[in-house]
Length: 263
Image 1 (cartoon, rainbow, N blue to C red):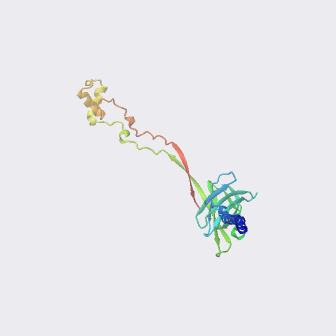
Image 2 (image 1 turned 90 degrees about the horizontal axis):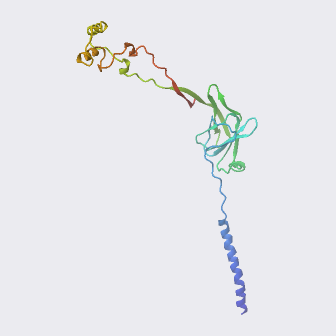
Image 3 (image 1 turned 180 degrees about the horizontal axis):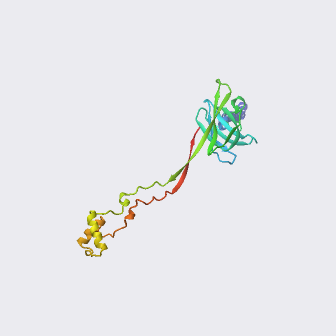
C-alpha cells in the first residue's frame, strides 16, 4: 500500500515538469524575430527647406552597397534634404537653391535613419570636401552638379569627383500659322469676252442708248462680258481683287518654355 501511495504522489510532479519543458521549447517560437527595416525606394526621402527643388544633382556610385545622402546648409548646418541611392544604379534628384555640404553613408543592410547601416564598421561615412552651390546662372540657367564616387582600391575609402551640370530654359513663341489664301478669293471677278465687245457695250451704257431688257438672253450675254460665273450678279469694283491689300497681322497666342540639360 505504501508503494502505491508513493507512485500516486510523485506522478503529478513529473507531469508538471514535462509541461514546463514543453512550454520552454515553444516559447522562443512564439516570440517574433526582429527583422531589419525595409530599405526605402531610391530617390528623394524628404525636403525640409520649404523651397522648390529645381536644381539638378546627379550621383554615380560604385556597386556593392547602398548609400544614404544628406544635404546640410553650409551656414547653419541645418538638415535640408535626404535621399536614398542604390549602389551602381543611375541616380538623379532635384534639390532646392542654396549652398550645401554633402554627406554620404554606405552599407549593405539598411537599419533606419537612426542606425543607418549598422554600428561601427557596418556604416562607412564620407563627406564631400567642398561646398556645392545650387543657383541660377545667367538668363534662366539652373546650375547644378554631378558627383562621382569611386574607390581607388577594393575595400578602400571613398573619393569623389565633381563636375558642373546645367538645365537651360528655352522660351519659344507660338503664333497662329498664316492660312493660305484660296485661289477663288485672290480675284473676286474677272472680265470676260474681248476688249472690243466690252468697249462697245460700255459706250452704249454711257450714251444711254438703252440696253436689253433685264433677264433676257442678250442681257445675260452682256453681263458675261464683265463677270464670269452667275451673269445675274451685279458688277463689282476691280479694286477688290486683293492684290494691294496687306495681309492681316499675325497675333501670337501663347509661348512655351522648355527645359533641357545643356552641360
